[in-house]
Length: 129
Image (cartoon, rainbow, N blue to C red; front, side, top):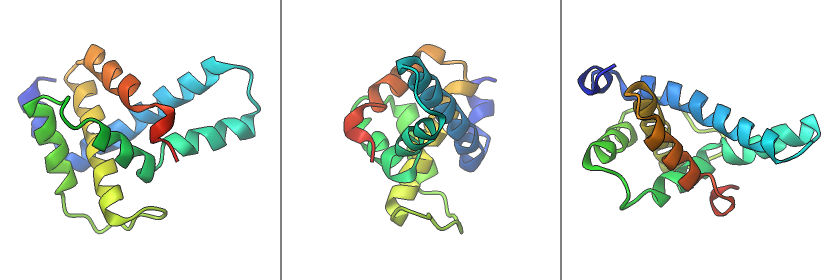
């Protein structure tokens, strides 16, 4: 899809895809580490793929995003929602939505190299919970 087509999508739709992209990336990284028990895999994944960790990841991107990427994140963060975050504060949930929307945007626009760079930059031990 071209950028204008992707920008025409709702932020929640981008976040929907971004959540799947992030989950798949985290699962692959965990599996590549070593032979880990399945229960441990799920526990590790949940430390990365949760609103609080994704909010930390989103904040870590400050200053490294392009203007367009920042606008995608900002639009998603500012999207009205009726959803209540289960284990995070509202502002963390909103930042996590912005992070996921960015990942969805990069995936749909075919920016695979940039997507991988963002994932590698943000999925570090200091950002997880």
